[in-house]
Length: 337
Image (cartoon, rainbow, N blue to C red):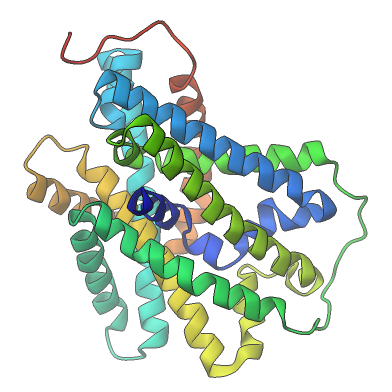
């Protein structure tokens, strides 16, 4: 249960979360109503994780693609499975590019970007191949490092404010809508990891999902508190935590770099593990193919992927996930077909 919860936490906390960008955009920007966004996101994640894993356990589907085929039929199911696989490849490529960029920043040597990319891909593939224990390792690093960074940022004095428009307070309904969107997008991204939960018996599945929700909720509330405290200073900043960490000196620079690398690596591992279930070949070959699929997207760079391809593809997959989770008549298991 603990390994599954940490693996899900690692997949959920990517570079966008660890940099504060997602927290400021979806939660802290709503001011006092940010609590509604947090509660809605956590509720959606818990509900969708439980629903998907229960469907896989009941029908005996070993992957999200198999569940799509069972739910929508062979033709449409293959298309839906391909869209989910593309989302995982795009997300994994973005995280691989982020790991390479961080290596190039921290280790200023010739060809450090290429070496960082190769090292991160190899490390991610090995951790993904190791199963739940390997996926949980970067999740544990996140659970240890991110709270330290956030507490240090929370203790910083208020800096000089940048441009901050005067606006009426957001309604809780609007904040809850952002939380719903955030939860649905990330549940679609992590749909390929649901077999980890499906292998557990129902009570343990519930406890693992609840433990993940509590861990992620604690990080989310702490990060939202940091962004709300320094909102005027980070309003226009693309990476709020990185901007604030400038006041922490070299130690803060290394801490935030470690948090970003652990977050990007953990999501990279989750996407590699999810993609490996798509290929109907031996396990080692499947993990090798999943690693190769990420390289073309990683060469596009982190920024272009996140700003262009990911939002549209993520929204489409979130809508498909909603259809997949709708209650239907009792589906037959693959073995009975």
